[in-house]
Structure formats: C-alpha cells, structure tokens
Amino acid sequence: MNSKGTLLAVCRLHALTPDANAFGLTAIDKRPVAGPVKVTKYGLYADVQVDRKNHGGRDKALYAYAQHDAEYWQEILGYPVPPGLFGENLRIAGLDVNQALIGEQWRIGAEVLVEVTMPRTPCATFQRRLDEPQWVKRFSQAGRVGPYLRVLETGSIEAGDVVEVVHRPGHGVRIAEWFAHPTAELAQALLADPDLDVAAAFEPYFEKVFRREA
Image (cartoon, rainbow, N blue to C red; front, side):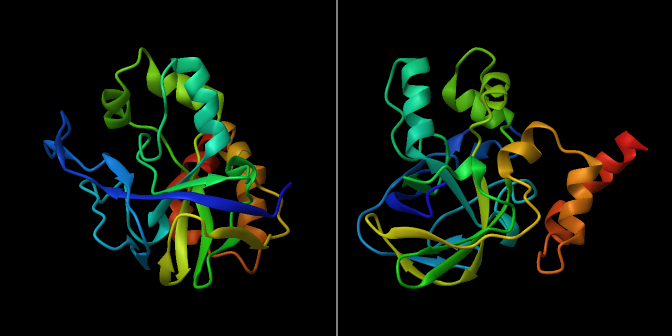
C-alpha cells in the first residue's frame, strides 16, 4: 500500500441549500477553494455542518475521498465527479483511503496532522444530492465510502500538498472492513490497542455490535 499521496483539492461550503431534513438546509455543497486553507480542530476554516449530531465535531472534522474512487463512480454514473460532489473536504490521489487503518495518521503538507477515525455512513441528504436510484444502497455496497479524520495538529493546507502516512497502528482494522462488516472481534481489537483513542467516536457503534452478537 502506498504511503504517500497528493492532495488534489481542498473543499469547503459553497452555499447552504434547501433540503428535506429536520433543519430544512444542508451544507453538503462543498467546492474547491484556491490557496492555503486553515485547518482547526473542528475542520476547515469557514466550513459549516448543519446537522452537528451526525456531521462535524472533533471526530469528524474532515472527510476525505480518493480520486480513484471518484473515477470509479464517473464510469458508473456517466458524468464527472468533481472534488466536493460527495461532500468531501479533501480529494486525494495516490492513497487508497478505504484501506486506511482506523487510527492511522497522515501528515498533510508541512503542518497538519490528521488521524483516521471512522468510515462515512451515507445518508438521505446524500441520496437527495445525487438524485440517483437507490444511491445510498449502491454507494454502501461498493464500499468506497471514504474516512472521517480527526485533526491532531492544526495549520494550513492547499492543493498540491503531499499526504504522507506517518503512523499505522498494529490492530489491523481497516476502514472498509469495519464499514462492510463490523464485528465484536474487530471492536475488541480496537479497544485493546493502548495507543488508540476510539472510545468517544465509536461508543455507539461498539454498543450496537456487542448487542447484536450477544
């Protein structure tokens, strides 16, 4: 697996748009911005999340998507999938982000350090944005969901920055594996890693897995 990639685009809110959710609005319309962008513990400067319960926060500060996964969907959908279309903040080339280990750390540019926390779970807002038949089911079954990231060290990033994997934990649990089939065995592997801070981010997921397999 490659240990380096390239940040192709940094995407943040373009405009709030009407949506049939509980808030009546969505911030899923992310588009590339030129030049350096500040990254805080809660994500990109001037970015917004409307549904703070399910998006944003420290454990979902950034959302990354791979260029080769976007190209896969371009072939399937028959139209371009530009950076930000899936609501991602970071479009990355050269890294298979779905094979990233939970807790893996990436250095982006010279300053920013992020940690892979969990897979993206597609929602009804995403379905409405793409307006494709059974989009959530198709997106999920393909397993090309991309990870959320926690920001460990703040700074600035911009398109063209190197994205380098600087730490991989030893538990072996990958984003794609956890998304496709989360099990008590995988949860125990994550909980047993003394260097991995997953308790807050994964508590509801762990409870669901343990309850299902009890």
